[in-house]
Image (cartoon, rainbow, N blue to C red):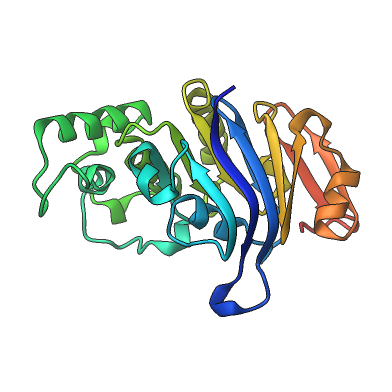
Length: 253
């Protein structure tokens, strides 16, 4: 199996501080899907930024499609955390999705191909009739889907999603799971979540990040494994689409 992501002996710390990530070794094959889980501050989003080439490791090697991450960005789609974007951003839905074709446009000028790709991405996410709507006027779940459409507009082979179910209601979350199941059929998807409830039956790998990284087959991911990651007792309750995690005493980690 061709490796899309290869990381060997990676260390990273901000401003020469104590490492956020230490001795990371990770391989993701084409067609595999993974859920990146771990406690807040454990290094999940930092790992994603390294994969995007937004950060450079202090030590070790990282390659995406056999190249340095910066050189592979055209083959990667990225959805940032919801709270990193201003929901009142003054743009239409189509304009937001076209940002995923920014490398093809110049000073806001997009080709017919760019616009067709944006329209196709919106249609796939069930948003074809919302192209002219203001992004600010949408519900939380609709905004999440628009951001996924933006990531898909560039026809990526690797899709990175950072906390995609944050701030959306349960109904929108179920719809998102269904969409994600379809996307996994044709591309490699890595999803970051602080919530073990995101570990889905369609996920191949659970990538546990808490300064160091350990990888487990999703089917064999247990409460004992979660305990080692979160450093406290958790219980896993498996359902059709997810396995939900609760700490002893009924509080989420």
